Length: 368
Image (tube, rainbow, N blue to C red; front, side, top):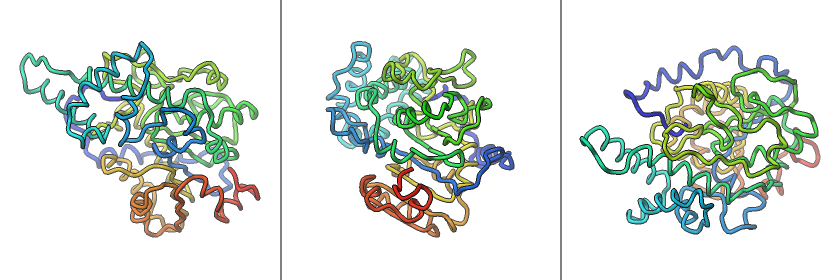
């Protein structure tokens, strides 16, 4: 969901925390946990660092180069109007806006929001126009960056994960799904809502990780009543048909992806169940493996989710950070000061220098 039209203020964070943590006695029920669970946390840097990153002209976007990539994009005719419109809003802005997609988006959105409430018969750009067109261009860039390609790094990392392991992704793209696709087909793992911890039981018991996409996914759609998410695809092989990135309508503000709003309303609709599942999984994890997630200041609720999920500043936990930025690695170190700490500048450096606990868990090849 990019946004519902706002009615009233956000719920107090204490209430949101209560809603997330409620029912934790059910966490892990029926999972048969017998190994130390690993929680992988993926940010934009993980999708930027895919094995095919240098094979095309449009890499997976980061906050700082989103609009540069949008200018280079040769969009599909169905996306051309949205691309032109977003660029017409962005290019006249000062450089500090063009260098941050997040800052630009929430500034434009707040301007439209305030105009709607304060100006009678305002003729300016509306909220639906801002949100809808940004949703369309985000998917256009991701479609160009990833297409139907499969990342061998992600395949290698996730190849032997079990049902006690989780992949917590803040990316809308389908990199994780394509990395798991061959294994899922080989092990006859059904492609269903339970793979994403969406409501509904699994039809089959599998030793397979849960994918938690806390900012939504490019292959989700709303159900008819717009109360829950459905999967666009019915089986893993559907990913072989096309890139599978939704082309959203530009006349709505509620989509099954969160754009970078300053206040993400995670307590509304199906988002709460997803975040509660993430809390339960993170609470049980013994290893936190972070790849390309910078823990930005705008993601206040993510930081607080980690604070309430991981007790005693990470005491007894292993923390592995893969990120080229020393500042990002230090930010994670400062957040979980009691965790045992490993840091790497790239995923290849990690594979070349796998820590003993990773080899012990996944064998002498040291690949998950």
